[in-house]
Image (tube, rainbow, N blue to C red):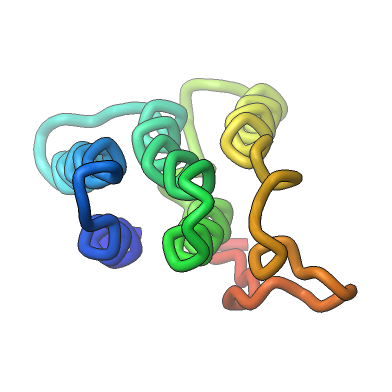
Length: 132
């Protein structure tokens, strides 16, 4: 996920994408702090990572949008974003679903290349769920 956020940060050049870059920095800092003494919930971690991804989709920039969709797929596959020991699994799954739906609500207005027009699939790596 860190690699995707760094790519998004690099690609989000220009003044109009400053919020995306700032969101990427904050998300990367949050991910890095997970390795130390500071622990945040999977929900908070998802929220911090989804924000720049959502902004990238909303930017209607095809390159940023493709990176954002790849990041969302990665988020769904990594245990650190899905797992949690303090809440019941059903509550976590509903919260994850709610956060993802909020982040992708902009997709009907995305450029055709990101929607997979003509029945083609959007080009993103296949989902491979780890730890299952």
